[in-house]
Image (tube, rainbow, N blue to C red):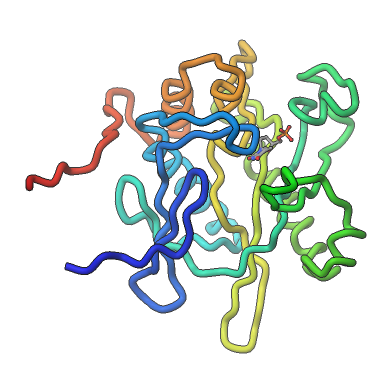
Length: 254
Ligand code: TMP
């Protein structure tokens, strides 16, 4: 037996070396953090749910021709992905005012925006992921102008697809955060969707009641996070009505 080589550990995920060259294994932890990890907890079952929900969304995006890093789910907590060079930007798409936009511009949470808005944040924990403009992105060389064009048009396609997907199951897609990477294939390089899409990185409100079905339950100390994520998974048809959430993998008998 060999120990797997850990390539990177983030707040909610670990990346291991993959089984074939050019691949990685993305492992979803149960750790929850907010406000740049000033608030932390372990929420049993979260990683399993995010692995399944993100698999569902990435599989569907691949099927409609949005290029992603996702290859296949391997087990309850892990998926095989293509190794990409992560672009150091958090791309936020907003349909409805909430969170930092509401605070910054004094908009009531829940106000429909006149059109979808794309924002960029520089991925840097020491600086608290500051918001940046295209000018900063190109001047500092984080992405080239044609790459920003690709990112914006993919973000719009992803938003259109996910808005419909969630609307169909009675959920309003308020906003979400995505990340992109450069995939190198022979002498070609292209921009693909990377990281994850899950209730950790989206705001999802029940259409009838406005109940929050996302990580704001943790950020705002509302409780019921696993129940909310399970509800999202059930509505998307990922988990059958009575399927228990297997929170632990097989236990190794020593
Ligand atoms: P915000 O309103 O706090 O800027 O968040 C916008 C969206 O981005 C929301 O769906 C939550 C998500 N998000 C992350 O996934 N990671 C983060 O670090 C932050 C700040 C927001």
